[in-house]
Amino acid sequence: MGLDVVLYRALPAGSRRVSYVPVRVVPDNDDTLLELLDRIRGAGRTPLLDRLDPVGDQAFDARSVPTLLEELRCLADVAGSEVEAARVRSVVALARRCLREPGTEIRFEGD
Image (tube, rainbow, N blue to C red):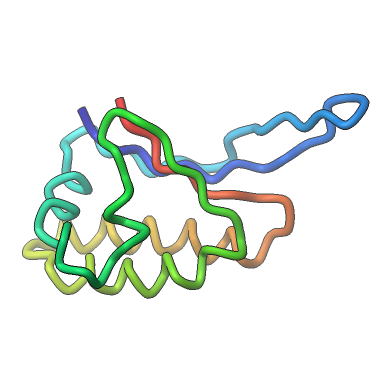
């Protein structure tokens, strides 16, 4: 399944329409993020991450990214291998980029 994380940029697409184009992707082909999320889900510390659906999509704009970054620390705390830690660091890098670059959002995209 997997839960890919994608940074999107909003581009004007005509009269009042916006088109989103992917800028960067952190793929989760091996379900690493899903396994990490299962370890923290429901503990009450990660309400944003608890809403993620392995078969749906969830978008976060720059306003919600500071909270998302706090919750990603919880994910990093349960990482038990370098592969897991590296995956979390990659997602954190996307979230930080979303904060720095206006007109971007980060999406968790399930299969």
